[in-house]
Length: 528
Image 1 (tube, rainbow, N blue to C red):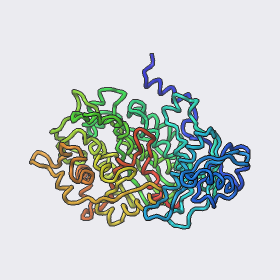
Image 2 (tube, rainbow, N blue to C red):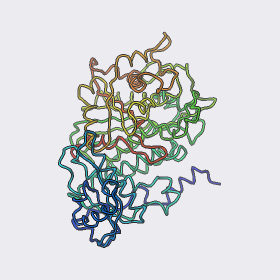
Image 3 (cartoon, one colour):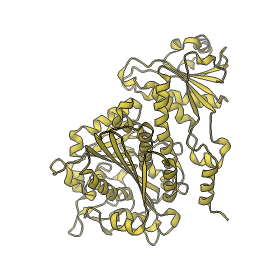
């Protein structure tokens, strides 16, 4: 009799068409007359800008007072027979931003699908004359593709539901270039959603490895997987502590997955990304009680984002960058072999870490992996390091959905990394707030006795701890040895910590793959 994991693996290899949402075709002006499409989704800031659709839409607004503001569907004389109007809303308010484009297109496509439209034409007008909206049409296409995403487990187990639409037409200025870039970004986001959103058994660490190997098979990205327990215990002792209990169950055994890409031309920047990939977080022995464990399969969205970004890099193939992504895939299980508070573990960097709370496992999983990449970065061309994690409930409370938080060490602050990432995110609707690592954060994690160098965490939830999302960044720096590479170090290394707890997407719901869009715009501006 097949196990559930074996059944999923068989399904994964038999259903086909695993990655694509649907075919996307760039169209010429006037495509609404193309009989292949059975509906038009028009994204516009005004009924008066609706060109050939204007008469039908204006007539509808006369019988429906909410139509101009809320949109809707109307019958038209075009061969498609119907048009969904998706209004952008006001673009000139103090709080207006480019997300209006993505939200309108996503809502419009969902309305089209509910009306039975299977071959929608997405019709986009020239964007507003404002620099913040210069990627507005791209964001619209990404919003439409978000609506068309089908979860991996549905694609595998219900192949008849693998696609919500048969094709998506795109009618907008520079349609082909927008299509190509949107498709590259979406291919990354699909991988991010697949890994981040799938349940803790479908994306247990060994199956993440399998998914990653298939995703990058035959690509320009090399895949290296660390699974040998002795190697993990020797070279990644903090990760090994979290993995100790889960490793007793072979299907839950941890993996450290390295993805490497190197451009064909002279390298001008080396990017190192470490993702938190906790496939399920029980809290460990400091167990998540009171009904707060549900949804913890999403604690792997940091690693999902790293894989998503590497996929985008592979699609676009920049010539001048080298990228190393690391996925720290581990399950924080509870049992007789689980790590416990009060243990003292020496990190890869030689730092003695006292465990204060087993529910602070993400920082443990990433610190040694970051240390490994730090060792490479000291000899790299123009290196920049980042950790990406759904790390703290405090971040969620501090900024709310759908915002990521970014914090710089000294060298990164001098390069204004946080500011530049925030600006990049603003252009694509992948939003960031900036926080700062202060001296109090380092003091908080300083060892409290002569036994340990560093305290991993206090015994309260981050949401009940002052500076609950800032201080963990200081711990990661201390435990990995990056504190020796600050502005006063012989080899300063720019490092930024990204807490995406509030940005990873709604639960229940579809993950966002944040912050892949912001990182793509920041690191790969030549493609935009």
